[in-house]
Image (cartoon, rainbow over all chains, first blue to last red; front, side, top):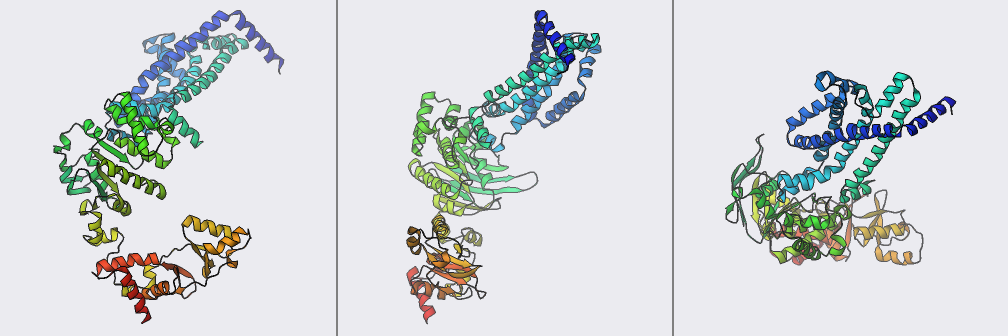
Length: 228
Length: 392
């Protein structure tokens, strides 16, 4: 291994150990404020919107259009744009921007998850005398849950990554170290932010993958196993 | 009782699915709506539980207009079985069966008792099946559960939309017989849609034959067979629109054009297997499409026991009885009866096998000509008449 990289890694470990409290605070901020909060808000908004979109074709076109536009805006631009729009510098523009990013995959998956249920199954449920609400909660949502969870997983992984940019607008989190490291040209400081952020993205992907399987109704897990 | 009064359904494009339908379905009867696809039978069915609303006319259930009833209540009081089965894959067998009772607010205990009672009725052990998921069942078991689900809340009226259409023939027959057995006990009012006339004949108390949104004939199976209303009904029940007199028929009209055959160089074991699968006791042995002979099951046994590796060509014994496809039917009949053989092979002038005539092939012909021509006499008399005619 290149000696210089080794030195950088040792310096990173030294920094981590001597600034434990600081780094942990940044990790907590990264996770709670920049991932859990915006993704949580996105779930609350996107799942009902996704359900409504399956009911009204016009609404579906409008929301999907808006979502598509948001997803196309570069993340740094999206983060920065809320500063002049009245949110100032700090957590707020970062949370809003990350919320906007997380929202589309969840809403799109809610929509496709419900739309993917066979019309015959829904007709059978209707024919047995389910009310629209019973159809939603007893049939549509349980069957769509795996797909919705996959959307949450995508949104979370994206949020963990994009959150490192939040420091550019004063949003805190692990990005702080990366920005400072870049400014001061200290490689080990960049790694102090980048390595935990990367590990967190992998961990989030791993755990949410398991959660996805866990929330999948047993009857569906069996049929998936058979297909494979 | 379900009554259709001048019921029509047309769509925006102007297509008329059902045209001024008048129909009375008596309580306790199993009525089969049958017809080619697009005849309006499924639309008719779905108008009863209002998955499709009629464009005009009235449907009465007992004495009440269906459209005046609360939609959800109406559906909970009507059993519904569909072709694609439609079990909820995330629920267990028990939960699927108990769905309507649950919607109706039955207690857990009552639901559980009902599930056990129903599963036992179709010989599915509740201890084994209640907690399984639909994907863990075979197609036939799934549709049994589908039928049980419709019966669960003990509705008076049950709608079945081609319920056995997606099953393999053997399972289908089993379920048909089970339904017949259940219905004999339960005496529900069942409206059953199918395009399979055989199924209709087997199950129905009354058959309603539909075509292009209209009822062509509504009668008991026996009446329909004996007095088809028109050529459409005749051909639909597989009788041929204009049965000809027996004397005018020739061999190719009657023969089975796809007999069970085997190539001469195949082995004895394969021959045995094929007989088993196709449920026949003899095979026609071919070499490049030309008939070599017949091999019978009882000729094979000794060789199979001695474990000899021979091709069927080595063991075929019988010189088959042969007629030409253009020969009059009476000739084939005479050969069948006179020589006391099970089958007569039909071989063309190019020496290739065209088909076979068996005693079974004669039955349908006799029936047709007998009823259509108003001919007097038993089948035996006609057969001997036929055979005698050939001898003369």
